[in-house]
Amino acid sequence: MRHGLMEAACERRIPMPNWCSNRMYFSGEPAQIAEIKRLASGAVTPLYRRATNEGIQLFLAGSAGLLQITENIRSEQCPGVTAAGRGAVSPENIAFTRWLTHLQNGVLLDEQNCLMLHELWLLRIFMKGDHSITSIEIG
Picture (cartoon, rainbow, N blue to C red):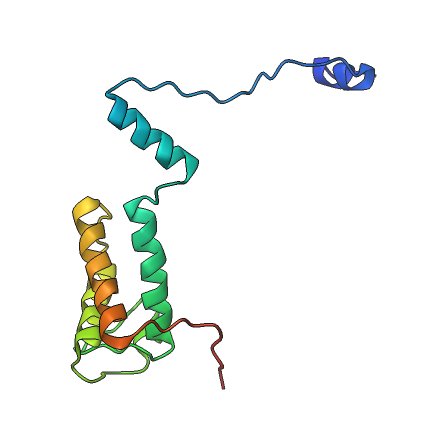
């Protein structure tokens, strides 16, 4: 018993047209079209994606105790990120505290905020050095 055209075509090896081909058409200035093509091809990382990836690094550094808060704030959603307690008042810890405050406030990842969050991430890199976390031992 055949259930439909697709099954019948597969059994008989009938070539089928590509019905679900995704096509997008853009109109605009050539520079804008070129930027859209670069974004679609993956040549450009959107600011919100960069902010998310850098936020993950800061979150892990805080959870591992590499970065510590400088004020009495607690993360209700994930207490482990502040479990190391207050740290020394240093530029990188101040940047981490500011980042965590923005995270808790649910900052909108628009262009301006993404650039500001990137500056906080850069401050952590330049002041403390790049701490690439390859493994975290628990216990």
